[in-house]
Length: 356
Image (cartoon, rainbow, N blue to C red):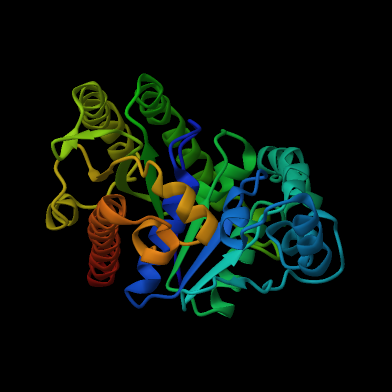
């Protein structure tokens, strides 16, 4: 069974989509099979992977592949069709074997209200019993179809029912942040929101109607892997002073408020696993500087910054040399991040196996 990792923060602009793409690519580069899921109605991950440059290309994709999106896979449950949810066919990512995309669909937002009602009332309205477990069922089936080791879920910035469902049915949570006051506020907010979601999921998994549904709602076992901070300017190999201030405050928010709140509802890994991965009480997995002008080359080539070739960089002389140095530094950072994620998940699986 693939490990599902939710990339979630209800603050926007923290590089969730870019992180999913880069981390997914790097895990695949390291030999894993990875399914990326675009659950954001804005479909930025889908556009990034497929390289759409206009409405005509988008229209053509959805005309030809509209039956292979996240929304289309959920139609049997949400539109009460007399057929079981089946795995959809993900899009293989060009130039990276083992990496796949479950494409997004703006119309997934049409299911938000219905799912919210189901998650509040499914214990008393039997007609809604199949909805809360349907997303988890679809992702598991689709991951099995491509024999994925990991499922990385790109999520919208919000606290709606779809995000609540995807977070609570994931195995792990990665929390992207940016060094600013709003990310600190988001950490404080999640210290309250995530425990409430966990308690809701615990209760939902014990409701007989949901246990007996065609798509049973699973018992939650979500664990926080850590935080990733991006989009800061470096100076002398370290974040500039103005950014370091907020990075420090993010660390304090995690240490003083998020960790105790998640520990109280059993959403942390054992301390020894964090230590093995080299994390301290701030749970900071990575701090990755702004990609600057390399991001436009990356988007044009549909390739992570760290995998750009010299031709794709479209530069010469000292500029090209600087680009290559930056590319190689980013490769080291994402290589370390992917290795750390892989190690922590393997350690957790071993820990659970030994506890049985």
